[in-house]
Length: 124
Image 1 (tube, rainbow, N blue to C red):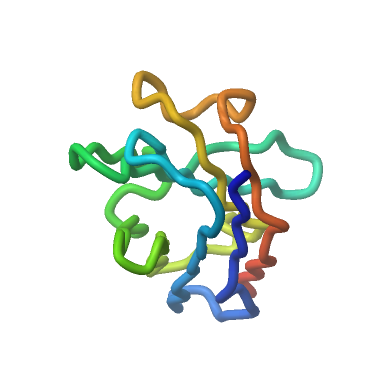
Image 2 (cartoon, rainbow, N blue to C red):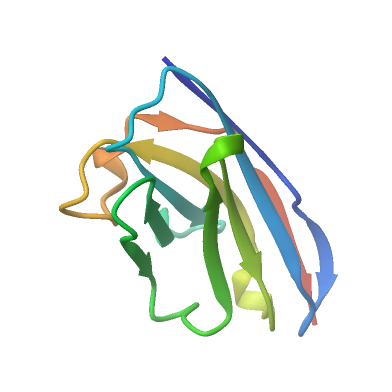
């Protein structure tokens, strides 16, 4: 089993920055993909970024491209989401998730493990 714990959420002004962290523990595999999802009230959960533990594959949603950067530290089993130029529409609960396949990044049902979520609120 894999356990994921997110941290780093909070309240920021529009245009500000936050860095989210996701620490993974338990049994992990080199083929795993780590994804960041967000869900705002009344909206579906969407994938904003993903990265493979090996192979160097990354994905970023068009809505965050150029503003959000996903990265990882394999030695620490930790994935990060650096968020800059934040907008009020970025307000959501952000979740870290893990899956084995690298063929697709975005479907939430493809992910096997989920963190508890961390709230990001961007004020205008």
